[in-house]
Length: 259
Ligand SMILES: [Zn+2]
Image (cartoon, rainbow, N blue to C red):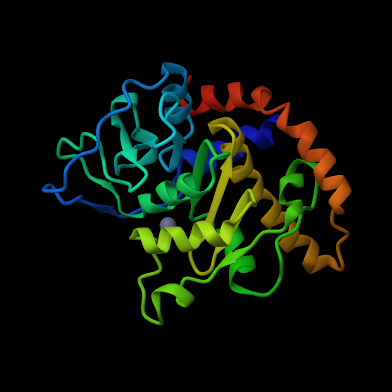
């Protein structure tokens, strides 16, 4: 299991499964929002270890969030973490490129006060479940958080028939957040997924095991008619797992930081 944990995070974090997001410059004329001040150092450290496409709500102001500037996730350091308001306008851009899809983060933080961290991923294993009517459902106890159902966002309903598939404005971000609703994970048809949680550690755990579960489910469907965790098992397993996240995290973080 340990090998599985670190191997997956390594694969996702350092080799780009978490997504090749597109950079775009914010309108330099827009007034910059005020900073909430320096974020907690441990939070920044988790964010750096948690890979480029993870964001965290600012610990000093719920109306601010932290996300790396647009760059290769493996190269992110603390200095690359930028602060945004919930409109996804950077507080202090200083010429740095920002993610075109940052609206995923801002709009989810706006409608989900319980969420303190978000991961957007282009992980390939989930795409079959986003593009067909086959539902992503929990295959094992570690993936129990999928038990409440995994909604699928259809961008065509909002952006029309010829979009570039990216969440590139607040309207699309809000629509995605609405599809996510109270769930921990939503799939995005033809695109990837988004996971949310109460901390950076929990959200990385969920992003990793959403991908793992998708691979397991695809395999089980090839073999036959799988039995999934029922709602009671999923809820009980999630409660247990949520208390154990710190254990794999320290290992993941060491691997991600190259220690
Ligand atoms: Zn994307």
